[in-house]
Image (tube, rainbow, N blue to C red):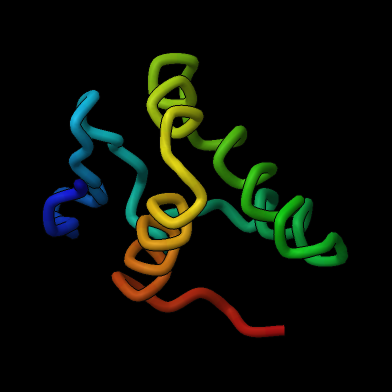
Length: 87
């Protein structure tokens, strides 16, 4: 079961799982070009395009081991940790 996410002042977001810690850039550090890639795609596609753009292979392997509920919880916490532009 995931532990509480942490949004560090260092610009990182961490999500702890039984398999390890997923470390993502703070949601506010996502580059505009990445947002441009996901602006017109369905939500599920946007989630994975975003994760594939910001994760290395090790981090993606940890994400791949999450069940759907854990993925939803992590993504919601990541979004809530900062403000993304709304469409």
